[in-house]
Length: 324
Image (cartoon, rainbow, N blue to C red):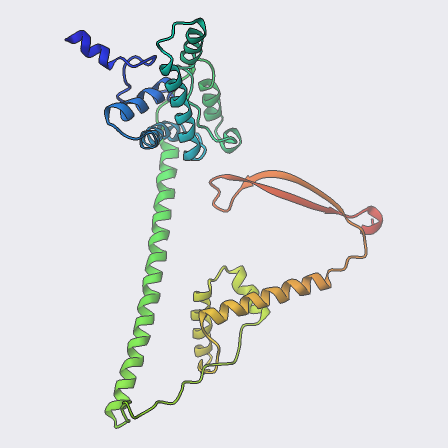
């Protein structure tokens, strides 16, 4: 019975299932495939479910090593391709030809090699030379080297960054709640004023009473300059309505005649942007010929967390044109 049990646990070319991925190295092809097969065969998960869970497990090691990885769907596809290769070999496992044996040997030779899911620009994105050296060593035959202890300094920076992001998220959520509360307060005050007027003897609208239509504001206050200021400050259309309305009230003016709603503000901003662009194109009439140089460059984005590929353009004047 013991021999039969071991034979059932023996997996083609893999040996035993990988119950858990451990160690101080980045996961190998054997660990990735063995863990995937355990989820797929023993826990009866679909190929996609098992692949996603396996990649989640593997990415933990790469994050611990501070090495950027590419998108998860690419890693999942790579693991599924490895599984399909194993499945094709297993289908022909009963054949004892030289070709079959050679294919099995080539497949198992890479078992101890790195299951590489690094980002295509990982070397450029990493700033610590030790991390770069570790990745290059792991990519060699047999995954040379091992991860050292946890970098407490980097771990503290990461925790502080996450805390700042969480605090900023809470601040934005609180601001939205206060804005919604302000809108509800204004609506309640308007309703109470209407009720007070009815108690003072004003006629209550009924089937035979028709209230006069409310006149909508027609005066526009959004100029191209104000549009440019709102765009530079990255103010949304809804926020612009609140800012402009409160500014008009603070100046002692009535907002009734003013066109003040999100849709109108949006249309006015679009129209002003077209006018600004048209003026720039109309006024840009260089008399001198220019030389254009362009090149790609990896620079940090606004968050400072990763680098992006941007296009750099340089306009060069000749010495005669520049007056030198």
